[in-house]
Image 1 (tube, one colour):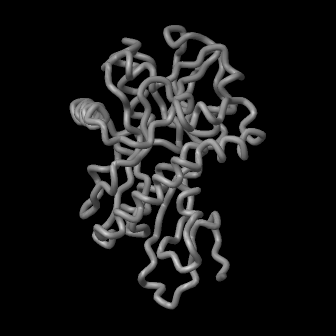
Image 2: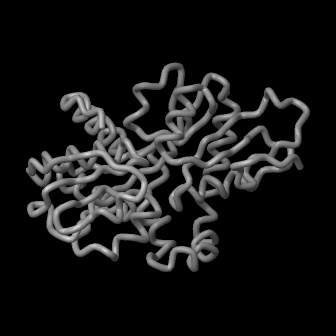
Length: 271
């Protein structure tokens, strides 16, 4: 087996037809583990070469055509040309998501400033919409850089996503779950990311990918037990089977996604 950097054992590379490899950019968070587990079930002649990235990097790889398939934040989908949604799978929630939050030591109405998460685009735009439409606040919203979590205090709150949100939320007196806030505002579920693919992803590939994703879903109880010690702050099984929604085929997810994109467009959000 050829050794390659930045792979999780999911990229199965033993093939003489390197140009046939499908380059996959997944996301390096707990919520993506079922997908990675599905890819891990493949034999040694698989076409898939999988890397893991932050959501913003994943979108950038597809934009620059450095990946053929990616778990792309929905806010970035409109910027991708010649890509299409692959399967009905993605990352969503229908209520509390647990891993996309606004955190602070004071309630939002008492904060002076909100720092956005440098790893995100969709979650930042969601937070900006909710600050305006749900919290009805004119809070100052600013960008951030690595280590911004340590700067959150009694005047400054922050958007935190992914595994960092799961691990850090207990350090803050006030935590707002953005999936739950969106549900209360709109009555709809929220879609954070969808699998997007280039023309290289053929119908036969899409059918195979759907089978891999279904295998990954079936492995969630096993994964939960295996990962429990690494995520002792949360109930991993509930997170993977209850909070995170993977099958987004229900029309309500499309409605929620479309409404979010309409709000972005109407507000001309570029954060």
